[in-house]
Image 1 (cartoon, rainbow, N blue to C red):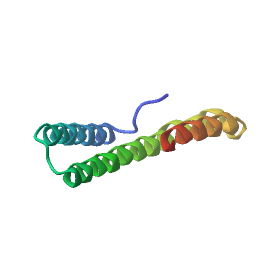
Image 2 (image 1 turned 45 degrees about the vertical axis):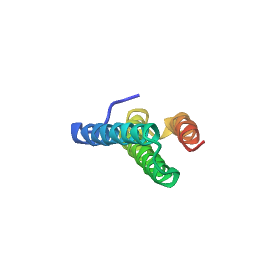
Image 3 (image 1 turned 180 degrees about the vertical axis):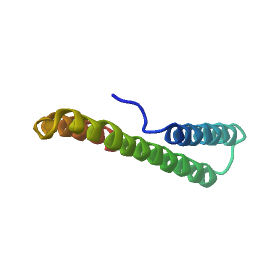
Length: 95
């Protein structure tokens, strides 16, 4: 697959992933010190939401960069393979 559209988009994803890493370390510490289950679950939900957002950004970039670019390279005749690939990727993401 092709790369991200821009360095800015890549940096946005990397920044989000670093924040998620910090959140997970925080959850780890909460569990170690036997924090309240509700507070832990709130943080787990926040991580889950953040991961979902990263996935959405990657999918958006994939569509903009890979699928559209492939269409430009192949012309109208090559649509089916790219759409099937996109469907497969999105299906794996939402499982």
